[in-house]
Amino acid sequence: MMRISIDRRRLLAGVAGLAGAFALGGAGKAAPKRFEIELSEAEWRKRLTPDQFAVLRKHATERPGSSPLDREKRRGTFVCAGCALPLFSSTTKFDSGTGWPSFYAPLKDAIGTTTDRSLFMERTEVHCRRCGGHLGHVFDDGPRPTGLRYCMNGDALKFIPAEKA
Image (tube, rainbow, N blue to C red; front, side):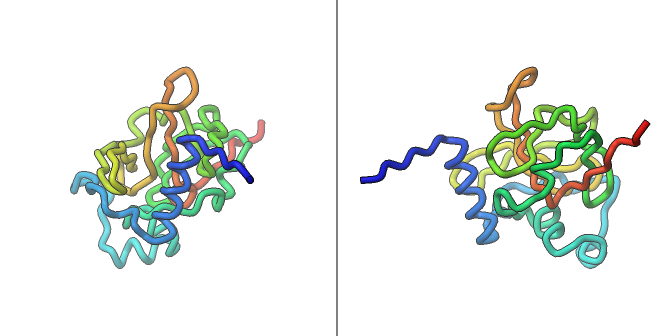
């Protein structure tokens, strides 16, 4: 008989992945209503790819392991795919083993948070401070120095490599 062992992080990653696959990610509380950049749904659809729109504007979750940004190792900055606000430095990125790009700290004044009560649990949703785009969630099981894991959807981000000296 085969034994299967799964830890809490992988279980939650799988549940979130299934939710994204079935488009259940948008059931949580929405971010605040006023942002510096506000566009109509049609304008957002024109600006974003369908996957980016689903994540940023409808709170969907991409499948774990589907984003090349999870494997991005270069120096640079991760910016909001909706408005290009710098969100995370590559120096705070780490491999969480969840299948999503993870960071232990955002850049100063880059993000906002709200309480998300979807999927029968309470989590802290992370959104872009400037456009309100849904980025992912933050958990308290990350590495030092913060102990936080900002688990972000790659579709919500773009990577800007550091300039070569």
